[in-house]
Length: 339
Length: 176
Image 1 (tube, chains in turn orange, purple):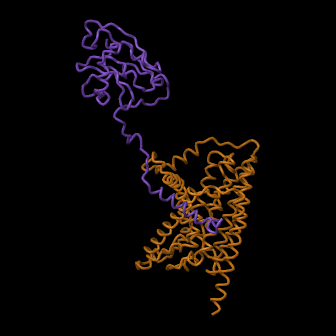
Image 2 (cartoon, each protein chain N blue to C red; image 1 turned 90 degrees about the vertical axis):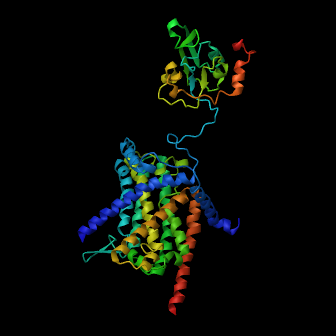
Image 3 (tube, one colour; image 1 turned 45 degrees about the vertical axis):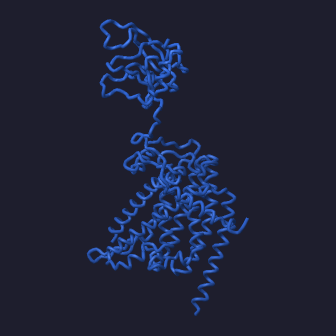
């Protein structure tokens, strides 16, 4: 079993990195198409080798650590960002259970009974990577970027957590595996928690530092924000961690609100064991890719929020809404479950 | 501000609808080396020094093109034709050196209008880019068209009736 888990862990790591790698390509293609351009199409057919070329370029760049920077922290920053981004994939159920030669292999590495909390813990620690990196650079723009990252995290983590509380009221469990299994058939949580979903996805945009909430990097005001002083693969790690985060966030959203690996069509086909499981995983990835597309779609549509608008929306908009959502859900279940 | 404006979501949906419409729109990009934009029939690009139907160079090194050139891009050195070179040059005098500086040239086409011998024409070919300046000075090796009739450069689109009439008109100095 440990051998299987190790192998599966390795596969998940590779898949995450691969998807993140091609998200950079997808991002550029989506951006180009929305601006009536063609995007990268020179490296390989349709430019499919572009991410590899970019990666090689990143490795070839000169590595610079500023003299006034705190060297240990400077290196620690991107490491934390990347590590935590990759760690979250452990609890996500990527599919049902495979049966090979009478042995059952669940397509989830660790079915923690507090799966959601684990995800949130990891995502929040990821912001420390940005904060440390920005502070250790000893550069005012980087510091401003990391201050923004920190305050943004505090304001949006709260609303996000509260939207999850409402979700847990409906599911009654914190385990991601059970939450997915409850959504079999068309009982997706988005139909039970539409407001909660809206709050969650807005907060997910803010948590992954993506437009319209990409204030920590904010090229127009802060040059590069927290990664102003970074170069070579350390910069690559920061940029890459953002895409890994985007992939993981999409997977979490799909798991929580869109039925994970369940799709009503699979149940109607009446397929047996392994085929149905693999088809479920396939549909899981289709949903995830659509969510990633949504992330990009929003990024290339909306302009960046101003800092005070961001705070306004977080504290005065999403927080009260999330509290109202909890109350409404609670009241609803109080009266329906009594009878 | 109405309530719908205040919650901002309808505006977002509208914006996202616009971007997705553009996503599926036909792209206007032309992938240059593989496909080229169609030039207009009288496009003025890289020059050619024509030969006549017997393969002799038409240019007689009169220098009118160099005088007409507003960018002063054309230089030439004339030479006298030897008796045994009659198959090479049509006139008794010919251009030993004929150079156009492509970085100076503004492709106005005044040289071809000034030419009394219908020797120089602008074609629909492009001047290729280069990393250095020197290769942009085009000598006769690049300007004169090849001898092989199959490789001759077609300038018929630019030899319009108006142009030919203009060249035959005796009131201009070069035809007197």
